[in-house]
Image 1 (cartoon, rainbow, N blue to C red):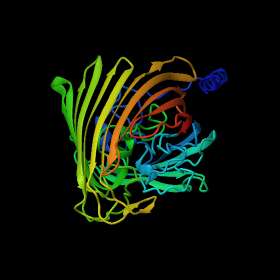
Image 2 (image 1 turned 60 degrees about the vertical axis):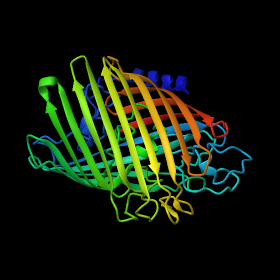
Image 3 (image 1 turned 135 degrees about the horizontal axis):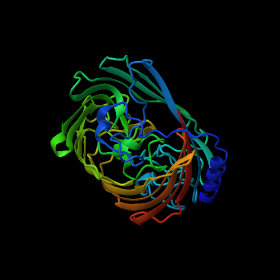
Image 4 (image 1 turned 120 degrees about the horizontal axis):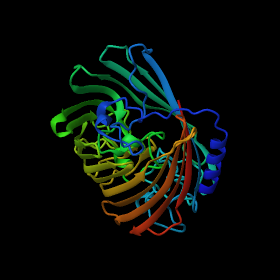
Length: 448
């Protein structure tokens, strides 16, 4: 697959007729939660979210931007982590259903165990391709931002179209991923207030949610807990300490569902009537040779997949990023604890009988190097490796330990085309049967 990717790159470069400039930095995010965070693709810039830059006074107040993410993927086995001829139920409590991911959304090749066994809703979204090699239209994204020049109010929406095979996976969806208004009341203070549906404030991986910004193709084994969107209000504040080349920030939110992805906890309404409170405290050191960024996050509130307001979810985590001369090192640790809920479990994938108590410990680390290339077409080559580890258990069930080794290559061409290839080596270390569930995946992203 990687050889084919290289052939495509060489053919594209050979056809280039005129040089086009690559932006000097990733496009800044719509919400200030990401203003404290750096990306792996361009370590010299402080933002890593995907949205267009703020309009200049002469520009139109309305901006329309977006991207198309087209993939090609092949998973081993039947595209799941379910072993054949297994009798354990619920089937999704005995394996890591999120392991065979195929795209930036974390969709897996399949969630069908193939034998009709009972599932209890601990499931990702599915591309529905099973073990077949397939092209995928992962995401068609349309971003709208309105901000009159000279005003402190910005309105942003991100709408995504997700074609899927309804017979063997999830049906195609029209998703409003973000929709919020942001007020920055002071000219000389980095303070913003946002109300609506927005990204998580926990940790750092949510900054890479969108395919053009993510260095690789797939999210980590911990992303299911930290990269979801929810509806509520948040406040971001950053204080610059110019005398020592530093800054400190606080990013806090009160939302319906917290940070988990929407297949695990639906964000669209509170089913308990109590908010989930989350926050991240960040520190950054910006010196000429390097940048260092540290953060600590926490979350507390009722779990939004059952109706008992006393059944709580609690999370804590820490993150680190270091950027030196094109080398980007980043990592994150996450601890998750959920009380047992009463009554059925309510998710966007349906209603399930048990809201079991759940616990997880996970971490990941990624190393990448962005090599600038001085050609008219190929602008940057970024090889990267990532290691991920996860230990999790439901109350009364056997704990499961898995890890994953990821390697890949990203190519940036002109300012509108990104090509990525990636290999995921999934391993069941304890508590779960070994199955063939490695993934070979790729992504071509066109952005405007």
